[in-house]
Length: 339
Image 1 (cartoon, rainbow, N blue to C red):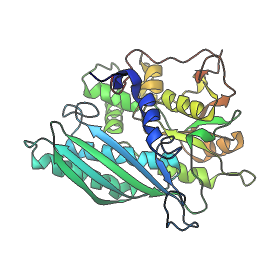
Image 2 (image 1 turned 60 degrees about the horizontal axis):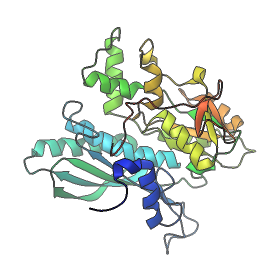
Image 3 (image 1 turned 180 degrees about the horizontal axis):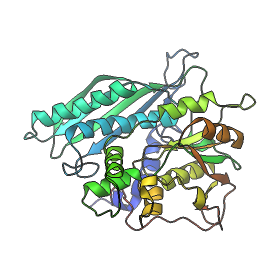
């Protein structure tokens, strides 16, 4: 038997850290890889850097026939990757490649629907289907690689660029996707209006990459400030995103309980705070930046709000409450890869 820990014992964060040892320094530190002149031998120094990301949607892990159709699977696979490009500072995508794995008994209609969803997302938010591969396998999965480019004159958004004193900003509400999943799984949500149910389910099935938020961020930067923004997307949850920024930046993230970006549809639900913090798959951006810039962004971008701040490392660890400084711990039911 092989010696050493299993993937379940390592967890996703430690696995990624270890895999980073096989790549150039820093390549595994952000939502996507930044390919500058040093990594691209013939790349002209004046061209904006390329951004590259790969993400996988696996049947019975990220989707099932009970929760979404083939078109939703395709849309979501592409949206997850484009969200990572936005989290790096891209205003759009150049294109994607797609690898399909599926059992031989998979109907062509399912594949056609999935690629139709991919094409629909690209038609709405930019980019081309550039190619890919396919293979037989025991379960269906879509592995998508997305290519983007930072805007000329713009800067990259890096997880480790936060500083003590930075304001934390969420570009939108959280928890709605988790509510949608609960509804699709048949959980009772008393008092929820039909329109709220529809919004929650659509948010879960058809997330939107926040390129608009990145454009707003660049447009409202105060003239006196250089470009320095830390950020990542909140696909793993708002709390996980804030903690990730804090760890990468050598800080503690303090969240204000009174300023949590709770989706309005969660009002009155017992799980509201947990789903806002840990529900995941909202695909918003969580940013750390100078307070004056944060205020300008909140004024410019509908739905954005300040949710806390970065401070020097505290006893609570990477994530705590601004009110009292106590640690913010995940609920026991939080999803874990390899768990």
